[in-house]
Image 1 (cartoon, one colour):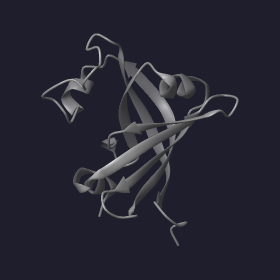
Image 2: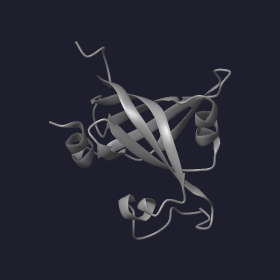
Image 3: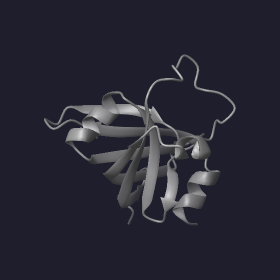
Image 4: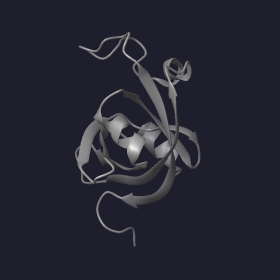
Length: 127
């Protein structure tokens, strides 16, 4: 199964981990990645710690755990670009019917693009 198909069909929880230039780590819950092509994914982000870290250190890891199991994926990523308030955000957003509760709809949103450097299963080294 192709990776984009996996994420289209899998249900679970995802965590995007980043670190600042000094190595201080942050982890945040994120939805499934949006596939732009076979090796490029994007995440929608607000101007918070994850984005701040990516401005000084482009490396990230996205960990996805499937509901009810220890199956999932780890995507090792490198940021390649971002777009502020991109019109594409409205097109690719999965929850189109409403904004996330408690969020300011006028707050800046960023579409952050990554290249996929490596894919591993949730557990183990993939061998």
